[in-house]
Structures are given as structure tokens and as C-alpha cells.
Image (cartoon, rainbow, N blue to C red; front, top):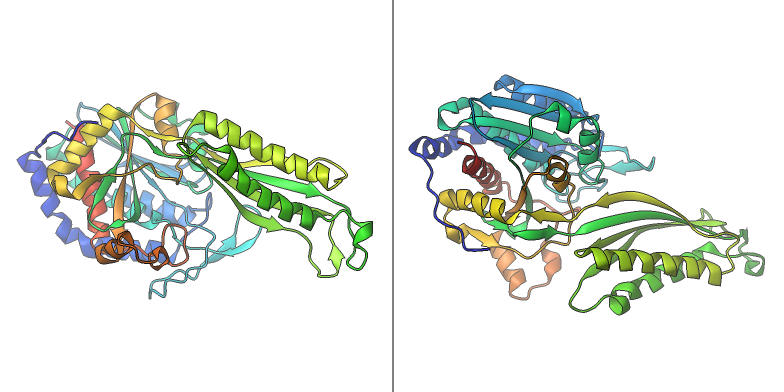
Length: 425
């Protein structure tokens, strides 16, 4: 992509950014409240209620319970383009260990029926606060733009359920077709900076649950068993060879086994084992090969162990590639750069994380642009870049992940507002 051209803000638009100062104390309290009270995927009732009430207060036409807990808020302001601005709302089944005085103490039951702690370990509390702030600023300053703003507060990004649930609930038919879909995410990058990537920006992801079948026995008589623990352990180890021996060096993939469960007692050999695994890829041909290899290995390990029946597979989640339209990315980055200056807006490499945001653009057949906001202490980030142990810098999904409150809160509001102005008349 060519370097961003210079785009200037109108005098009315430039004035709006100065009004963010007055909002910061209230926005900070909203963020702290959301961080203390995270909700799991498809359970975001409280968060959705906060977002919906705020948008109603500032004149949006609000539609609640879209895809169970999603919120779509519309603000029409004359003739002009329709832009979709998206924030995801869900927390993660993670016990927070940040030590912050506003750390989450929440617990709940996850989609597998397990009792878990809950944490905003991926910054979705920032995302919701940013979109609420931008909605208010655009509503209170309608003389600075023309068109329609569609603010989407999406559930269940972490499980890839949310965008699909909202679309299945008729989003495409119920709401106006946007000209562009815009979204942003906080990541470990120097706070105050914005990163973008044209084309493939984030990986595809496939998550499976696999049941392995054995034959139980007394722990003292393994000869009477077909041990699913050994079968599962061998499977996990062999799966590590998929990336190291079946994916070309010029390509990339990740195979992670995040769950291995089997048995309840030390002297009882169980009859089943359960694996949950996650696969990340950037190319469809690599994805197909890796998925096939993973299944081949699991089936073969079961057969080699003499399993009484083949493994059972179920899909837990599936994320598409996140692909940023080149022309739309150019226009969006120009708008962001008009406010921040080119030195704070940088290109980044494709991320191995995954998103369901792109499903909105695909459903409407319109371009999407997804960019990232830095949330890490710049000095700490520089030390890690210069060779310090990366473990000192917590990343998304870590129980220690705590993006800097300032300037991250303000930067996200400014970036989304600048991006919106790049598209609104």
C-alpha cells in the first residue's frame, strides 16, 4: 500500500477533539466499572445494558438483544454514507492477577459448564468505552458530519459466536447497508500509537474438541486397559510435528492443545480423554493441510493404541481471515494520520490472533478495516524489543494483562473518531 496521503480535518471536526478533555473523567469511570464487571461470551447482559442506555441518552435509535445480547445503535444525520463502528464486549474465563485496585473478582459458568473466574484480559472494556465515547461526540456535534452511524456492540468475539449470532438475527435485512465496517483493538504495542496492515491482517482460527476412547481398569492392572491418558499424551506430542515438519518455512501456522482432561483418581485408568485444540493459519491451502494432518495424527494415535472406536470430533469455533480492503485502509489511515501525524501511525505485521469482525463486511459485501491501538508502557516495550525477556510484558489473554489506562483510553477514542470522520461527509 502506498504511504498515506495528507488529509486534513475540517475546522468543525478539529474542534471536536478538544472536547474529549471534558469527557475523560466520566469515560475513566465507565472503563473501570466495565473492567471490574466482565461478562462471559453470550452473557453480556449488564455490559449491553450500559451501552444501550448510553446510546439512547445521546439520541441513537437503539436495538437491543440482536443475536441474544448484541446492541445496534443508529444515528441518522442527513444524507451521506452509512458507517459501521464495532466494539466487542465479552470477557474471558481467566482469573485476574494484575493486582490493580479495580481488578475483577467476578466468577461465572462458561460454555462448557465449568465454574470459572472472569477477566477482561483482552481489552474489550476499552473497546466498549471507546465506542460509547465516539457515539456521544458524534451525537453532540452533528454540525461536523453528515450520514448515518451504526454503532455495533457485539457479543462473544472470543468464541466466534457473536458476529454470526447477530447476522443470523437478521442484521443485513434489518439495518442499512454500510459503506464500510470499522473496528479497532488494543494490543501490546507502545501506548499512544496506532498500527495498521492492509490485506491479510489477522489469522484464520479453527478450534476442535476431540474425544479419545480407551478401556478403563484398575491402576494396578494397566494390561487390562487401553489407556486414554497415554493415548492423549502421545497425541499432544505428535501434533507438535505438524508445524515443525509439515509446514514450509515460508508459511506459518500454530497448533495449540489448550485442554487435556482425563480421569478423576490416581489409581483408576479412565476410559476417555478429551482434547481441545486451536489451529491458526494465514493461507487457505495451509489451513486445509494442517487440519488434515491434525486429524490424521489423532486418528492414527487412536488406532495405534488399539482404541475400541475412532475419535469423535466437534467444532468449537471458527474464525475467518481478517482481510483489510486496501483502498478502504488507505482512506481510513489517512483520516487517522490527519489527527495523529504519520509518526504515531505505523504499519504492523499480520497478527496470529483472530477476529470475527470481518464477517460483517462479508455479509454486506462491503470493505472492512481493522486496526490496532497500543496499550503498553513504551519504555517496557522498548526493553523487550532490545532483548529483555518477553515474559515481563504481559500480552492479551494473560492474567497479568493490564493496558495502560492513560493514554490508551484517549488514544482509542481519538483514533475511532478520526476514522469515522474519514468516511462521513
